Image (cartoon, rainbow, N blue to C red):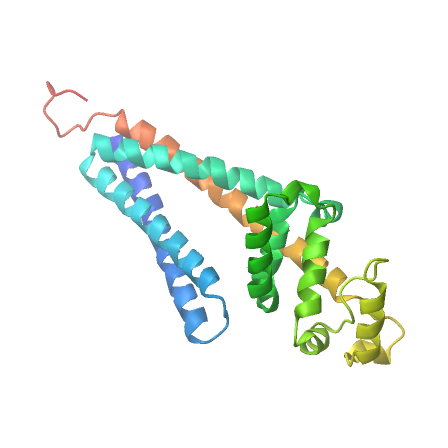
Length: 253
């Protein structure tokens, strides 16, 4: 049977769903391992990763069963759900790759602020409370420099900022006019190794640069997997419209 026929399409679709199953199990395993060893303290992050892994595992099982039995209904729902996931993931991945430094601190970069709370679990409980409060009041678009204000607010409430400064080798959060007093106080009490040198960067700049690099990696990986999803949709459509050569020739497709 040449590639592109019934058997080839079936084997390709089964192989793709097996890979999705392995990725789903890997996500669940990594999340459980990270929680068990205390690498991630936020239960919301762990729960989110496990939920994504379970969702991917279920979709892969539906696709695998549909491919093995050539089940028309299961293949239909599989390719519809996979196409919706592709649209969402493709959009998010492009947004991650297109986000620049200026947009990171703009009032509309709520996704970046959420990402920062994930990257630095020191901030997560404070940021979560601020997001809930601002979302309830409905003033997302009326706060200029929303992300910067949110991080400044969290930094001022942080009890162990000295530990953060020492680990990141930086002093203070952001050296702006609005936070000059707080920054001068942080600089005087900072014990980071960079104080022994002539240059000491702010922690805000280091976090923004690190998050920007992580967003690029996240966007690239997401873009790669989004193309595998559209490949799965194409295989499912092609395989669904093919007739099983072992079936009754007089049966409907």
